[in-house]
Image 1 (cartoon, helix red, strand yellow):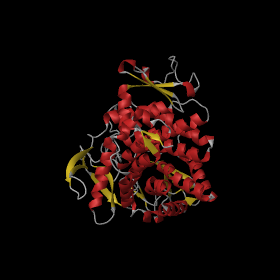
Image 2 (cartoon, one colour):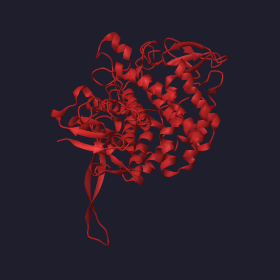
Image 3 (cartoon, helix red, strand yellow):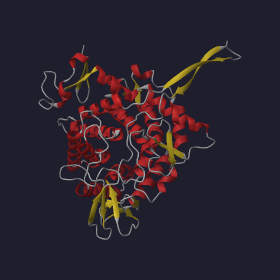
Length: 490
């Protein structure tokens, strides 16, 4: 029996295993390929197994994993100073980094995404059982985990303030009207804006860079910008939209324009690192810091471009940014192996053979998020889109193959005595973490031959963050409840 639901974007049909869609295509009720009819009347056919896999975005496991890690910090006498980053290959427990490391905002951001699910989205009956933590308790742990992060807004030596601040401070402001978080957003945007160069037309990424192959030690002689920086622009766009700072908005827009010219190849693959002369803005060379070679396509870099240009289109509505996002997305899809999960570098797999390279589920989740943004943009303009289907396939492949054994909430009864009422049992809970602190495995921080730190095939905090963000984006699109998630609050 087919399950069908009319949504804002499409009619979605959920078929049995015997009704698998052919070659993974979007097809219409009459069997025509997607794109031959108006996208508002098309049907997205997903098997029961696909729906089950995607449903894991909203499972008890995700909430339990995050709460299990977060609640450990409640035993500290002070809010945490160290933040989860990764699990070692073959390991299960998080390795932590100092609070001024670039990944510090992702774990608190994941907690805020849980809070957003409870505050912004009404529980669907099938998912109501999954929400175990009262939102006041969740709000407290969010604040506990971010108390020491506000100071990062004044770090003037990094371009990563968008990653460090936006995942938690934006939601703290929007969900709780936390004025301290809003002041932190404004301070961080001001600091990031100070790294913009009119001569280069970019925000400087790194002041210095040292690998086993090259080193840049003098910021006055070289200006370094990486493709990752596209994802930090939303901090500038967001604060500019809140405060009316036009100079900040224009700097972010110019960074995106320059990146189109300096970091995107003719075939729409991405360059990781571009080196410039800060005196005149001339391009000196292209390198990689995390990819296979200087001329290869590092998949997380491609993912940053897809999502970053899609976000930039959201803020500017300049069609060239959406075009760039689509071109990068199409290149990603063309290179994607049959497994449906990207290797850490597309060209490394070409040189060494299919299945020989470690995967990177962080690239998969970032790309899925970018695909959803592209889909929303195309639907808003009345255009056909294959990107919702592509996003769901990435999610399905990741959830089918790279989820750690699940965590769950364990309940026990406590005999509770009161003066006024007869003794009764009350329900207490703890977390059984299953295996691993992270929701996902199969991420790759850096597999570059000359990297100072080479890690592959492990858990990674921002893989989990984008896993959660993809879920919330589907909720915001009105699609989450189809997969056992939540409905948007009225």
